[in-house]
Amino acid sequence: MNKAPAKLLRFGKAAQELGLRPITVPRWIKAGRAQALWVGREMRVPRNEIARLEGINPDRLLVLSGRVSSHGQRENLTR
Image (cartoon, rainbow, N blue to C red; front, side, top):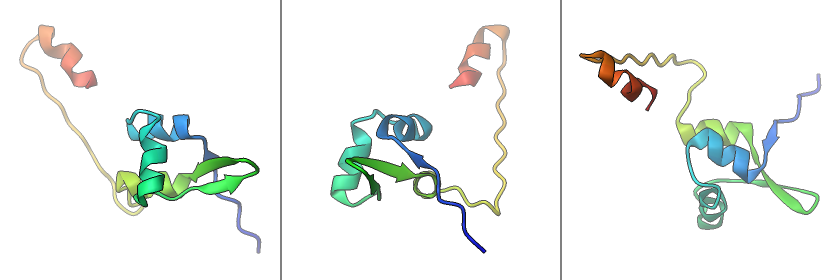
C-alpha cells in the first residue's frame, strides 16, 4: 500500500497558516526549529511540520469561545 506524499507548502503559505511573517519561516529552518525539504531548487515545508509547529494533535479537538459585552466590541472577536 503506497502512502500519499505529504503536501508541501512554500514559505509564504506556511507563514500565513502559522500567522507569521514570511521571513520567519526560513529563519526557523536555519535555526533548526522547523524542517523543510528540497524540491528541485526550492525548499518547501511539509504540512505535517506546520501541524507540529502549531501544536495540533489530530486526536484532539480544540474549541474556542468568545464573548463581547456590546455591539461596538464585535470586531474584537475576529482577532
